[in-house]
Length: 265
Length: 251
Image (tube, rainbow over all chains, first blue to last red; front, side, top):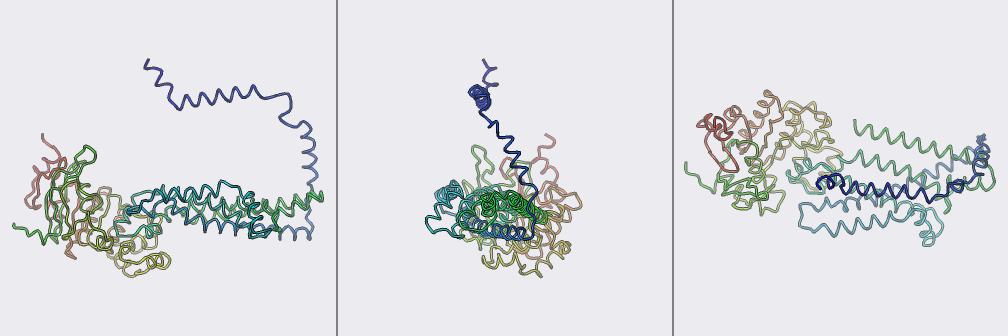
């Protein structure tokens, strides 16, 4: 009798159940062709080939550069708004400011964690639709639509990073008589800065992607240009614009790697 | 010796601390005067760190009381006053590894500085001269702008000492500050700490294992075992059998 309870831990029972559910689900699939559209391969190939060669004419390169710059600035403003909102909210949600004080921090943490969750629960596209209704078709609406969910994501990550900081240096600072706010800047932030920057840059890349998509609410960015070219069936231009988008992401990636490396050195 | 408790820097009365059912400190009573170098000896788990932490006000005794310069640390509210009274050097020094040395040293000022000054100093170090002079005295002035994590154990210990010199409390506590150093570094570190205390007529309470180091650098030794105070003697009157009694050697 003692043999069974050891082998069947709760984790293993759950794992076994999940495997069984997956296996059972395979029987409900109609394998005779409806999963992938059978004619898809040839039309995908057609689309793919029609993109070559990309449009590299000077006039269009200028348009693409301008659109890239617009998307980039839009993404920068979105992420700046996200950091401005997310950092203080994340610090409060982490609860570190209320340690060693008589304030009951549990309700404050719950409220701010809830706010951050609400902000990131709604996708930027949905925020955009709501905001366009509220403030009209403008770049400001786009930036706010980007900033709110990203602040929710950043704030949560910041809070978790701050909470997982090693305790000993923090306690030692506290014993010099430093307040929690001073300890935030002398102990917590230096400890989490490389991870915070790395994640923020990753989110910045995501915001470039999102900014390109959000172009439809009145910003002349990459997404808007791609949409125009697609409408006119100018696939060579689409390819150029995508190249610019990829290039932009790669550059941001290189930039973040350099900053992180110099911080860790 | 008749001790006037009102003049003692430390008055510990029946200090008792439980961790669950475990009695870490069992009715420990002693006093210490300004200028004393008090070693606390005892095997692991004998309550040395608990005693130090209750003197620092990090933990509060379940029974009894600890007065530092007449103040009950359990009721002490002001950070500013507390940090000018008590400071502690930890076994692992517990510096912020990502910060440059200078800011770890100047952190000794955080109890006195306002928020604005503290933040500004991170950008443009305030009292750099003072920090430099102290580091020069400790022999690591050339490391002032290095990242603290790049320093060796002995160097980090000096940074912790430098921070303590800036904080400059009346009572300095040191929790096995030389445990992770090689013997010659250990002696050097102890000499730096004890010189700092005697030069400024402060009081030191330090946990140490080595009878040799205790006799060499301290004026008095308190022996703890299973949370109880076994002996409290001037180092000149402490013999090997006293230590054997603590560490159960020869039984």
